Amino acid sequence: MLGGGVVPVLTESCRLAMPLGAHTLHVLGCELSPNWWAPNIQPSRVGKIGNLPPCPGTENISHAMLWPSVRTMRMDPTPTRPLSRAGLIYNSNKTLSCLDWKLMRREILALGLSVSVSMLMLSSCSRDDGNNAQEINSTEEVMDMGEKESVVASKVGVEKDLVGKIVEIEEVTADEIISVPKGAKSYKVSYGAKNAYGQPILSTGLVTLPKGTEPEKGWPVLSWAHGTTGLAKKCAPSEADATHPDREALQLVAQSYLQTWLDKGFAVIQPDYEGLGTVGSGTYMDRHSLASAVNEMVRATRSEFSFADTWYNSGWSQGGFAAVSAASAADVPSGLQETFAIAPGDTQIPGGKEAADLAKNLISDADEKSVAYSAYVIRGAMNFNSEIKAEDLLSDSGRKLMEQASEKCLTALKEENTIPGKDVFAPGANLDSLVDHLNANSMINMKPSTPVKIFISEDDEVINYDIISDSAGKLADGDGTQVEVIEHKGESHRDMVRRAVEDQKPFVSALR
Image (cartoon, rainbow, N blue to C red):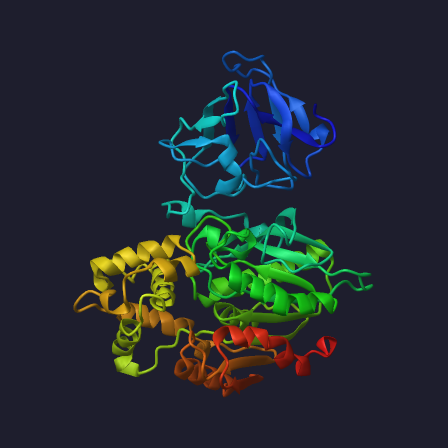
């Protein structure tokens, strides 16, 4: 039963406990079935432990699993492939089907959680004799790490020495995850990065290896920073199956841009951002958090996959801003050749003393669809900066929009929102703290140390051309920078991705 790397799943009335801060999961006195698969666990790591009470109606069987390298796990009684995501965090008032675990995709680290909980316990796991799903009732007060915000969510992290290192690897395919280009192999990885406060956190992303013979010095790398998808865990490109709300944009990128780089012999890595793919609250346009997501994934995958030092740094929309942020960080990984910012956004609110009025006017002019981006900007800023308070800013409608922004991915928010920008702010709203936060994160405060190419379109319907052209121009005029701004006319936001390979060929000989 325990051979071949197979690990047990609970099939009868059972109790399951995992002490936080340890690498051991205790399965207490339950009938075992060889349907819980987890890569990287060998039979020798499954052993008998004593003095544990039996579950009612089952044999007194107790096992422990030591998982020293992979620190997250996930239960699924009917896996179709090896899985290793966590599924151990549920609200005490919830009753969930065991068969729902695959869809819930909850994650928890069994190491380095900075929370005031010492034990997670799931109990009363029962199965009827028919085909009905098993039900799980948690009897201890535990964290709800669902799509809604949690008091402890933003505090979940990893040990400092895991920053820039891979924590978990799971093989995926382009059929399963639509944001993956078609290569030799693809993986979802978890790795250590830093949040907007500079604290170590768990981040996720995708890695795709090209077909063919690996060069002696390893594959060169394209790092791709994705465009806006939302703030919630489920919005991450690494979570994107065929039902993802933003599937059209993600597939466009994978097929028209990333696939070309992959076919030319580049490994493609795609970092998610803080709050996406893991627990926590997204900070959206915080440049420090975005830079860490990019740079630490470069470091982590370089070490894990023995990639070459040569890498290119590219991104679209929010990701274009992230790419420039990464190139401007104090700790850019060695070997960066070029940074390509495709139709990037920026947070600059020009106007000096009139900036708050300009910000209010820009958002108030947005319709129900386009206000989605402003909602993410405001909600992301509020998630980081306690000085930006709902009571100072928002109407009742504005607060409702912020709730939606916390939960809904971009396309869903744009399609379902009924609140226009003019209804977001309360009368007499004070935007000073928000504007200060946005301007502090702007490109105008960055100083990339390697060449940067910024591609913008005068007819981009998503990005404010006046703001980005001003910000990019100021960045290009900065002392010691090597920034070139390349402008187009007639191109939409998505057109900028479609033409990106042609735009970048002059700067990357391997693409020609």
